[in-house]
Image (cartoon, rainbow, N blue to C red; front, side, top):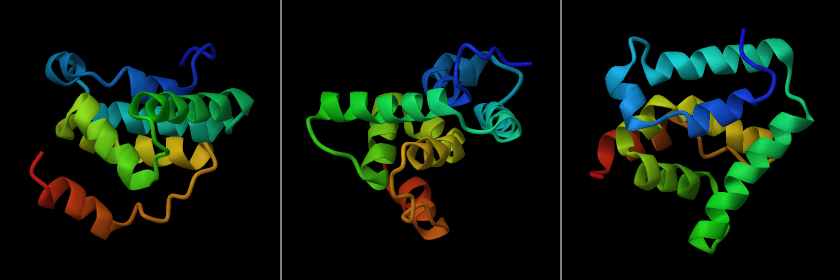
Length: 120
């Protein structure tokens, strides 16, 4: 059982580090799915909404501009790496969605273009 102290969204975004990808028996994609399953089972609460909005607010503050979904994913690629952003992609969608942002760009075509078509 996950600790209720941290939002699953927080765990997805902040715990996804390259060292996790290299040293864990469980892939970040699997860990992301576990956190999203837990979030679905407990339901999204005010803390999850606050965390999602805060993750985006912090990145917007660092970059000095508002982020749409594509810019958020590209920022995650630049901030964490293309491999990690790919592994936690479903979590990035959920973070943006819970923050009340538009996720209509999160299509298969967008995913393909970003992760299979762009050299980062």
